[in-house]
Each structure stands twice: as C-alpha cells, then as structure tokens.
Image (cartoon, rainbow, N blue to C red; front, side, top):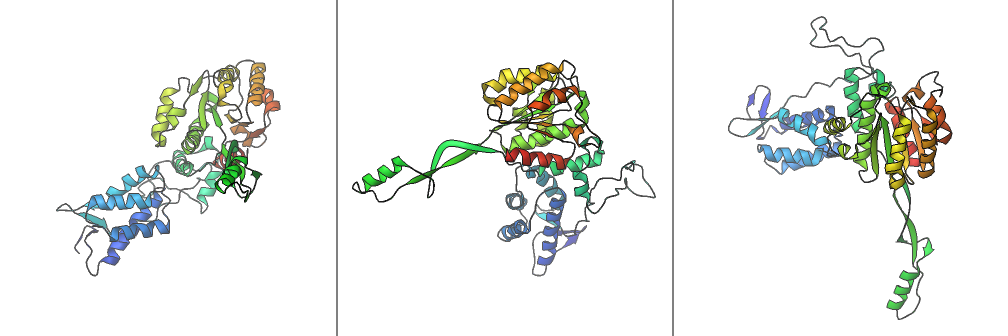
Length: 386
C-alpha cells in the first residue's frame, strides 16, 4: 500500500489492515464531532459492511457508512459533509482513506461570563481562544438562551437536534385483544361458533392509547426576539417528531400557521421557510386579538380540543388585558392542558406582574420558565405527562 500526503490507498494489503482500520476509526470520530450519535455497534457494523465490499469503490463506501452510521434522517447532511473530506478520490478512479487520527475536537462549553472571544489572534493563535470547562454541555444547558454568544448558539443548535420529545397520549375508543381486561362478547361468540357452539374460554380486550394533540404558540414579537430562534428550533424538533399530532403557530400582530414549514427535515431550511411565512417578525404584540383568532379559526374547529396547548410568551400586551384573559379562559375550556412558558420566569427575582400574565394566570395549568435548554427539557416532561 503506497503512502501519499498522509493518505493511504484503500486497497488493503497483507499488512495494511491496521492502517486502514485507523482511517475508518478516524472517520467515525469526525462524525461524532459533527454531532452524529455513532455508537460502538454502529462502527462494528460499518467495518463489517466494508469487509464485504470494495473499499476502493467510492459509491459502495459511501452507502456502507450512510446505512450503518446514520441513526436519523437529520444526520445525513452532516454525513455528506464529512465523507468527502475523509474518503478522498485517488488517481485512477479509486478512493484513498486518510490514515491519521483526527485531532481531538474542542469541547465547546459555555464561555466564562464577560470573557467571550474577541475574534482577534493572540500570541500567534489561529483563532479566538475557547475557555471551555470540563462539563461544557451541562453548563450550556443551563445558560440563558438570550445571552449566548454566536459559538454557543451554534453548539446549542446541535444539542437541540438531539432532543427526542415523547408526545402525550390519551385513551382511544378502540380496543385490542388482551389476556386481561373486560370481556369481548363478539370475539368470544365467534370463537364459540368455531367450536361447535361450546364456550371454551372468554376472550378479553383492553383499551388502546393514541397520541394527544399538541399546539405550540410561539410569540415572535420584539420583546421575545432573543429567544425566538431557539424556540422555533424547539418547535421544529417537536413537529418533526410527531408531524400528525403537533401544530405550530406564531403570535405577534397576527396569527401565522407554520406547521407545514416546520415539517421539513433540515432545521435550517425549515426555519428559513418559516421566516418567509411570518410577516410580523420582531414586531408588536396583540396577544388577546391573536389568541381570539386562534380560538375562533382553529381551536373550536378541533385543533385545541382535548389538546395540550403551550404558549411561549413574556406576557407583554399592547392592548387591554381583559380580552387576553377571556381568550385564555376559552382556551382552557377547550384544551386538556394549557401551559404558559415565560423565558423571564427563570430569572432571579421574577414575579408574574406583567398585565398579560396576571390576566392569564388564573386559567393556566402550569407556568414554566423556557429560558434555557434544561427548562425546555422540563417542558418536554410536562407535556409528556399530560
């Protein structure tokens, strides 16, 4: 096997299996650094697949990795970026696998408050210095979403994709056969007819569950702008997880349904499409009027009936708060649960004194803080247990 520029031809010889294995392991480490959940069994499956294929064939190597290392459709875009950098074309139409181990990726963490990187080179360094703690991800989970740096926001987007919401369920009228439960007269009678009329045993059935609808109402007014991007990404994860039972709307000076836009697989394309559909981004707030539009057009027609409705807003209302209180009361009568998520509720010294919050609070089932990834994970548990 010939070596050229730290690369190795992917035609393994008698003594080159260790070098090729090093290159393959290095490729999986690059994928882990890109955010793919590459586990040991997936790596083993990848190596076993390559063992039965022609590694010099670029197409075969690509599909072997894509089918074994990608755990979710959202992983394909990251895989497509990493594959060309590691499986390089060789002269003659083959493929070369880089055999060096990749450098350990920097562990991104929350920067020390007040000490964010300036972007200027210091002492010959090639970029800003990241002062990362050993428990970077855990620290970042509790940081305020509205106070993150650009680097932290990028890392938060990768963590957001890893969320796996479990939709709430509700009892269904349908029944399924079971060893325990109430008697099933029809199945019992049919069994007796097949047995010449002799009643041998009692067939039983039990209730089944079906997903409960979830409605996400995200305030995109000017006061919510620091949190709007993260909350829309959270809504995208929820909609992609349960596209048939989750609806998403934005609140501002008008009501906008963005469910169809958020059903796209790629988060960036989904948010770009949602941004084009939202005409009142970072504008004013008329929560009472917009909620009335939602209740009249969508809520009474089935979207909110027996659903879990989550309102993301800080409660600032330009108009009168009486209308807002009336609409939240109407919503509480239609929905199974109404949860209000206020990013400011997680800050020290917070008190629900805003006019909108005061008017809505008597009709809410829960008031939660949504200012960090940890509080959004708590919201997932609340919605699941509803």
